[in-house]
Amino acid sequence: MDGDMRDKKLRTAAGADDAPPAPHFSEMTPAELAAAPTVYRDGLMEGQTALISGAGSGMGRAMAFLFARLGANVAICGRREEKLAETRDGIKAHIGRDIAYTPMSIRDPARVEAFMEDAFDRFGPISVLINSAGGQYSQNAIDFSRKGWEAVIDTNLNGTWWMMQEAAKRWRDARAPGNIINIVAHVERGMPQSAHTCAARAGVIYLSKTVSTEWAEHDIRVNCIAPGAIKTEGVNHYPEDVLKDFHLANPMKRFGDVWDIAETAVYLAAPSSKFVTGEVITVDGGMAQHGWVWPGGKPDYFKE
Image 1 (cartoon, one colour):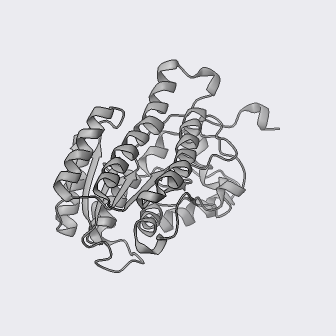
Image 2 (image 1 turned 135 degrees about the vertical axis):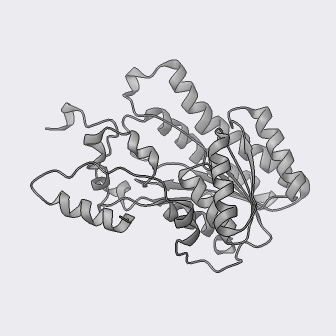
Image 3 (image 1 turned 180 degrees about the vertical axis):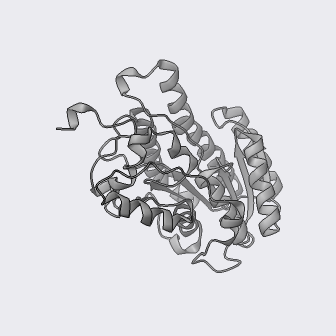
């Protein structure tokens, strides 16, 4: 069943007396990513180079496919080499383009520096850096372990910063324009049961706004994308009773898909956004204006 039919079935079930079953999401296949319709013309990113972290799965992988389809040189990184290799092999098999990949943790600033140095040596000044790597888990904040808090902050905030700073230094030194896109979250109303990632993503958002001003003199733009409920394998980790209603947290009453995020990233990477910097583009079906999301399950206190 394709995504649209699955969403329709869920919406129909949501109006029935019986609660719908919790959906199970799998990633878009390489064949689907290679054939998904796009509003962008062939060759749009020809001669450009995109560095994408967290591209072994989900939104990062979709962006790698779309940028490769549009003609960009693509280099990806992530923690799991086997997932990166799957992305590389899928792009080669279905699009006919070679991409580079590097297994690494963005939490290691020395490793980030080496990765960025290699990318600039191999491709010259890159065109766009997309920070899609990140991770979190749902838990009440009062129960966070110190190790869990530090891991989420170190990945989502510190790791993103190491990538941003290392790219910016090289753009400045090369006197070349730069473009950074950070994948964040909608944080204006907080994120109950995800306070650690809310703190980190808020940090990235306001870091991005700050350096978009500081780095304007170097012709470096910095923007963010805040996804809502997006169909990836990651959402399968939520409790079943939560997942079956998760899409109802936005007024469109459906999930978005990774292609929504990939096409938004191209908008920010292409000349279409040449006068846009310091902004957050929210792609969430209106969830920011509608209701609350409880990824670990709504507490009894709020069920009244």
